[in-house]
Amino acid sequence: MTRPLDAVFARLPASAFRMRFRLGAREQAYLRDKGMDTVLSHARDFVAQRLAPAQPANDGRQTPFRGHPVFIAQHATATCCRGCLAKWHDIPAGKAMTLEEQQHAVAAIERWLRGQSTD
Ligand SMILES: [Zn+2]
Image 1: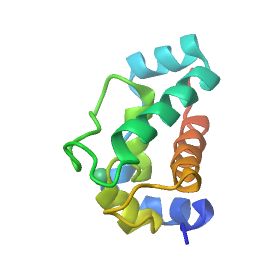
Image 2 (image 1 turned 45 degrees about the vertical axis):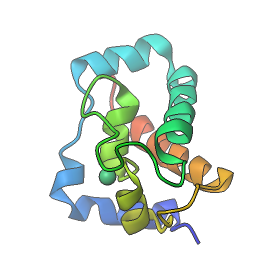
Image 3 (image 1 turned 90 degrees about the vertical axis):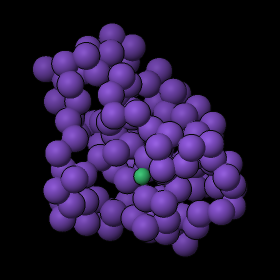
Image 4 (image 1 turned 30 degrees about the horizontal axis):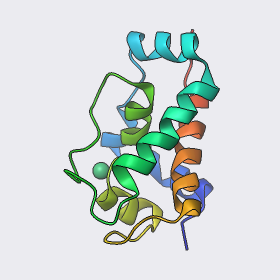
């Protein structure tokens, strides 16, 4: 069973590494300009292409640290690679992610993005 998002978000503050991620000025501007719906459609694509396969390309290094708000959100929510998804979200590595698991990852990204100020 995928770990409920409330449980994941309750644990994230214990990680200094996860907590240090913030949207930079560029990513904030991108989110403001494109809007949440568009950014979340990118999130769905990134998850489907970079995470969902049983053996993703460059797993562990497939998520850049800047350049798109979703990338930052992925590091902040431990949805950056299959190792982190297994450890933090109870989504097993080594097999293709189900659609539900993909939606869970996108929901984590959305929740984090909505919690970020874009002022
Ligand atoms: Zn990771």
